[in-house]
Length: 315
Image 1 (spheres, rainbow, N blue to C red):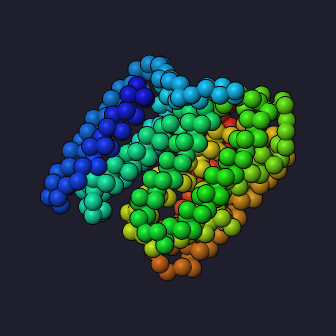
Image 2: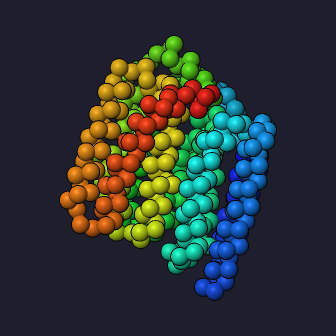
């Protein structure tokens, strides 16, 4: 059912790409939100029933195993997708009702494609699928920003984060000889530069979150439209950072530097974000520094709840 939901969302996104006049664009927006709400109802029905199924097909084969797409529907994955579906719906409803974007259809298409990419990341059991979905979220964010000059620093920081993620996965793959993410549990026994892998991966996550010392890319976005800024802060880079943290923590936590690095960055970023919120005057800057407080607090809440250490996210 999750695969079916993702397919319907993709089709609705394609429909949103239709060029339309201002008047028809408004009608198109209401049709789109209605279709997405109906899809959400189907998703909730599948979530309630709890039916388990898997969509899987192979792209290609390699010495490390098959390169494939897996979308696994089970009770746990329904719980993971649910909050991100809600966040996307809220952004689309705000855009439809208050006309926050000049071209509502294009904006709706971007956030729907992003939700499909997020679903692929959440349900991925293959490194290639995870990386492909990650790159898609980066590209879609650029369509929200639109302005090349504004997005330059944001792009460079995300490219750096992607390079770090790729380097980390390359090291892991060289040892486990598999593209299956579930096999990273074996990496704990093999052991190969665990500290470097943890620091490398966490740094990529911090860049995407826009944590202190790595917030140059996120802060560059204060010149874009408010609705676009909020969308990126909630649905794009920071969200993908959270998924990466949840996917790979089972490897990173073997490093002695993992928790000190994570805790230090969360504390410093929260304090820095609070201080800047109180001292800056521009409301967009306040939003950016406000989200710098939000994500560290969310991580700590997930940790104390035990969710972030749940091996089911990887397995």
